[in-house]
Image 1 (spheres, rainbow, N blue to C red):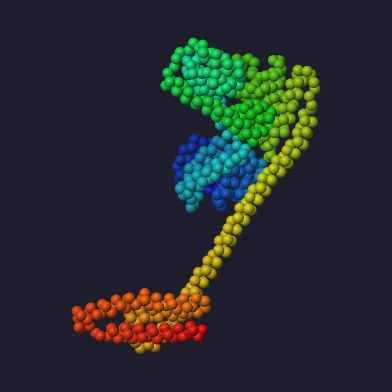
Image 2 (tube, rainbow, N blue to C red):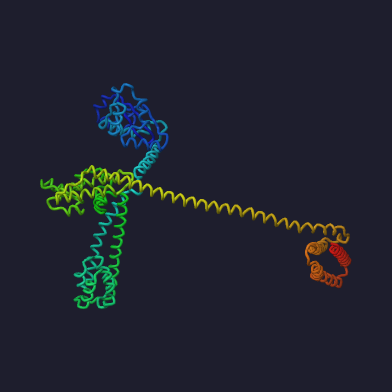
Length: 595
């Protein structure tokens, strides 16, 4: 018989053949010693085939298949390719009994687990990077880490609205809050009782007592003005009147202001804790209606949440039989009864439901057994139904009510088959309504999304349309500048014809600027009706510009006094420039009159 070993690794499947099968089976302690030595292990084990995974997604699929005991296509192909065709002469060693049973059922190979196979697989796991060429220990560790993270992430992922972990935590916190609020309120009663001991006998509720301790404060300051507040808190006028009368004739000791401040602050903390407890209870009810609506409709939110928390999850509770659900929470009493050979308990956590309390003493065991049966059905419906509805829970509750009336009056209840038929019809209608609501919500969401996208598109189109307008405005501005610059070229040509401008360059520029000012004015005024005003304004501009020439002349005269070496050419230049400007003015005036 040929013994092969299948080894699953994060990088792929490995098929190994073993030598000297009879000696190995006989000498197991020697195999354990040779596993640690690589040279001896190579003499025992030989790698036949190695099938690597193409990607991390394929590795995750194969890991899920092996954990569920399903033969993947890659594993099937490897075994059919490299194992001998005569299946009776082949013995395949595997580490997991589930995958061994699946291989034996589907492919027909005899599989073996445990014993020598476990030791051989331990050695393969230790020396795997040496058996496969091109695989290092570091890369193998990285592949194992990546596959482990992805496998754990895939196992943890569930529907967010169907997670029962929040129910387990909230019911545990609710029980803890009940204990703490009870302890703290007793502390407030004892502390404030030194000052007002009669209030303890009048008020029994803890939260109400703490609120009254806040409102009353010093009992000597309590008067009829606070009577309305007392009535609001106690919801009873007689109790409020009794509190007022008791404060006037109280036997309590006086209290200082600092002690009263501490009592009020602590009582306010207790009141806030009680308010948070109520909000937590409403949160628990909403979560139970989402996760386990049938169970909460049958037995109540608090009892159903305690059953889920005690079982560990809704799936575990659905897997329990009705006999386990019946005594869930009474494990100590069960084992004590088995040890002492006494009577086993009849109920556990389901005793807190109203049905068992309403039943007679002789019928408590019967109704608890019936209720546990219905609870197991409701938990399975909640766990495995696609659209959770409370229809089945309400029908099961009706059946328990009918069974209670049967025990009391003898009225025969309806058959379970008829009730379930009605429940199926109503559940289909409820599921259709829920899907309709979900579709409406989806349509509303899509409409909002379309409106948002349309608004964004409109805003982008407005931005794009505004940019070409800005470009057109920017292009119009240089055109206007060009129009203004064109008439300036004419006086420059006219100025170049004058011979007087060839003497000095800076004065040529000054004369050109004056000529440009003079030339631009008549051209602009020709198309406008205010032509004579422009003609009058031109000499004013001359007077504004002439002081500079006058200043230049005065400076030149002073220089002549101080230095006779100054050239005389400045005087004739000014004369020539003034003559040329006067000639051009006359020309422009004649042209304007002709136009």
